Image (cartoon, rainbow, N blue to C red; front, side, top):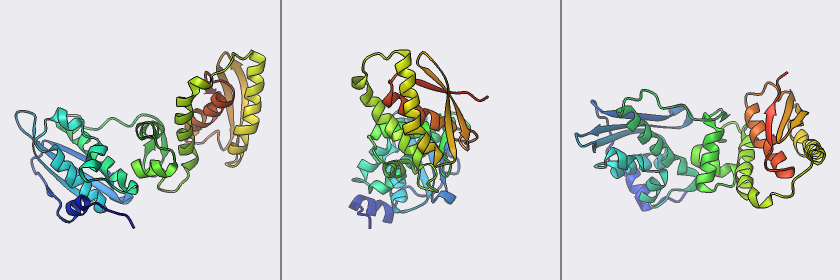
Length: 277
């Protein structure tokens, strides 16, 4: 059973600014009812670029309704430039905190606000998220996961799911999410770990050993494997084999798993590139 603050209970039971602005200047829509949460945020902007009115319609849990209500109270009267600086942390703080499993509700509010402002400025569609899709259930990319892990010092898959829902569906992406978490934290720790310069022979030998010991056993679990093709300077050319070869997330596997392992066990300068033929 989650513990809700009095502010969350109040905004859930007595939500402010619920409804629709028929001639809204900016509209932001995020989430989907199929995923369990959806928010439609509408803005009315005055001649001084201030948010004169704001209303919302939400489908979701108590935290989603409370977060949407809090967001509207926060931004009403702000200039668009001020509203752009509102983060999900501001929404959670306004409510006196949210259960960690419900932080994604505040993130949904932040995303809806961003889209509504873009809509007001004439951007018909928000730019597609950067990176490769890792969580297909919720359409979350490796770049989005990497950014939220860095911003909030997240350490587990459960943490990532709480913030942006990635990994909260079928679970097939858990290995890749864990690899991204590992990459972020090891990358931050790497400068001090950089050691002596390896000769080419030492480097190739360590790459082969790392692929055999750290990479191939993990890929084998999914019916795949990897072959070392060549090493030129700090660039390692590899070929994916079996199910890995045609996997939709092979770019993520190479960057956040294979490359991360080689950087950890061989040298931080290595970059991995795939050879298709």
